[in-house]
Length: 347
Ligand SMILES: [Zn+2]
Ligand SMILES: [Zn+2]
Image: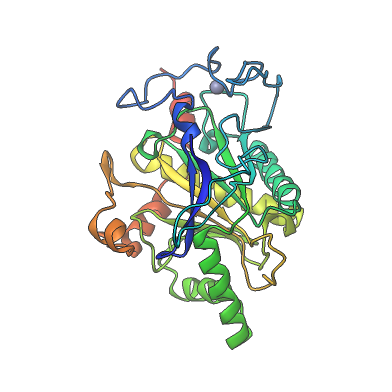
């Protein structure tokens, strides 16, 4: 069983090989459409309150959020340290780090889009705590918080949750963003993301929604049809640096974006949602502006954007849609979740 990190000398990046995860629990991907009623509690769900997990531990009888160490971690303090040295130019090292799971709610049937504002705010106080705690570990160079939602992105359990990979390397996108931001700050004295926000405000066509301190927009350079960035307007390198007011405002904008996504085609909208935060490697990341990205795989209902020749083969995206048009669709989508309005209608 191979569990280690392997260096890719051509891409200059680490590949986590975690072959022990092959047998991880799987309770998704069987039904084609998950629109049938999902129960609020599922006795064999490893994320529902009070249930037993694969390692024999019991979940708390939690009432809001619940954080635990992933039972099938990709990176861990327990990862093998005594590794066979690869031949020739090849390099490997121990997959040290911490992998965690954050349950958003005890309710199995809900999604982030359906949580109450206070529940989204509660989640936005868990994320900073995790970033600080895990980022302060000496071996951790970066804390990647992300949610995979929907069978279209291979989610193995519909229970609302995200994951945390606190790794001994900085993930590639973050490394690139940190480098570009640092260079921009050095060359111009300005924060790169602030210049992006300025251009978006000047153009205006791709802004989805905003309030006093937070904004959501589809970037000019969007790679996916419905790619959206959610960010505080002030520059903070990570979510733990936000004021309470900014976190509340961010929760408000985040929630509205999630509802608009679902309302677009009245389906639970699948996405990959990473938080992009500054590395915790001790570097100078003053120019890094924390933001949340949405990478939804759908172009139309039931039509996936397949990553193929240009994207997988060459590493650059070919977008089949104009961000200005897609942003307008989202902006016009209702701010009240379709399930809520359906519940309110008699009969
Ligand atoms: Zn559950
Ligand atoms: Zn980013």
